[in-house]
Length: 205
Ligand code: ZN
Image 1 (cartoon, helix red, strand yellow):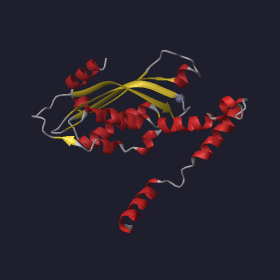
Image 2 (tube, rainbow, N blue to C red):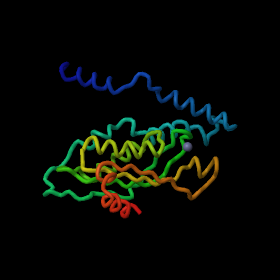
Image 3 (tube, rainbow, N blue to C red):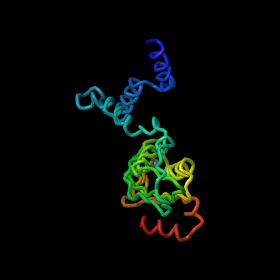
């Protein structure tokens, strides 16, 4: 019995980061923010808010507990020599900017040209989410998605295009609703071969 329990306990310990603040510290910080706005964290409408926001943050930032490379480990090799572009387009995501913690709401187009093996298409969407659910800047997120696919699948090429609205720009600061930031990263044949590149850009238009 001991032999089974001990390794499990060690695994859990490894996952638990001692420097990570616990839930009550986060809730207390949120009470401080509510007080700072001028409101009263003890009034009935706000009493449960710190706990709710903490749970929401857990969801917004779930990506820190995922390893995007691991999501791409399982591949299929029986693809009958398929070596054309595979595109998953218009993948919706929600992220948060690392400068203001404001939402970044957008869509991603992820394409690759396989070299002998492919992944289940839902895995591409999961990689997008694993990076989106962190504190981000769009440029970095675009590069992270492309670089991870390149590194793990070693395809002939990878292309990632992201179009997103940044709430730190639409609801505050310069207040420009309707603006969209477009970023892209092209690797391998998407960078070197204008035909692949244009084919992808046409799909993502
Ligand atoms: Zn921002």
